[in-house]
Image (cartoon, rainbow, N blue to C red):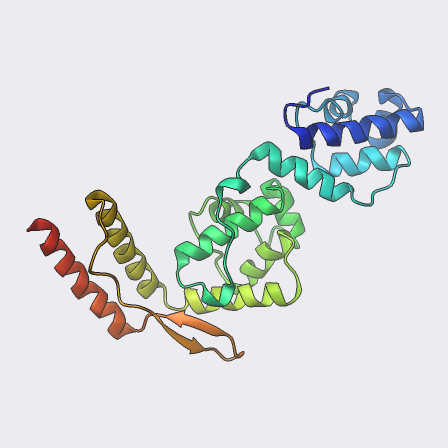
Amino acid sequence: MDHTIPERGELAEVLRRCRARAGRSYDELAAETGLSPATLKRAASGKSVPSEETVMTFVSACGGKLDGLRRLWLDARIADRGRLAQLRKPGLPQFMNSRRELSAALEYFYEAAGAPSLRRLGELAGGRHLLPVSSAGRIVNRQALPASRQQMVAFLTACGLTGSSLEQWELAFHEITRRPDLDRSASRIEALFDAVAQSMKAPLRLRPADSHPVVDGRGNQRFVRPPQKARDDLRLAVRLAETVAG
């Protein structure tokens, strides 16, 4: 039994105990589940995290309880990948202000869902016609945002978001993607300020213009940078360049 990653080892222990209580051999389980004996043995080895479907099928065939099993699998999967701990948890969707922030939030939700395979992600989304594998791959790799509000909802649904949380993130997607040019410009300017500040190893006296709060149609407060503010940012960027050059 491999306990290199405790959560992974704990999942394997549960599978082994379940099989022992049922008194079933791996060959018997394979005949009943359609999974190969090698797949079942590997699932209970602790050396890797099996798919969620394999875990559920394994335990069901042994007559075990499924309560809490998905959480156990999810903890093992997240710990095994080690990616979620490196990501920043998203803030409130109504305060999301750029495509870059939204893209990072979607990656976080994907990892928090256990980073299912892209094929499985499409199934959880309601079908590959809603979330094709190619689109899902670009989204989780921060190469693109969903192509539409429908695809945004499909992706979030596949990641386990429901109810008001799902609605709020759908609205944030709509608000951000309807002004893509402004967002990309603001992101580039903010990145410039941050990069120069790090190279100078000193705080900058010039900063991008602050966004201002507005209330959307649902009564949620958001922060936006209007066109005049964006133009102010561009002028500040020029002044910053002149300051650094001097």
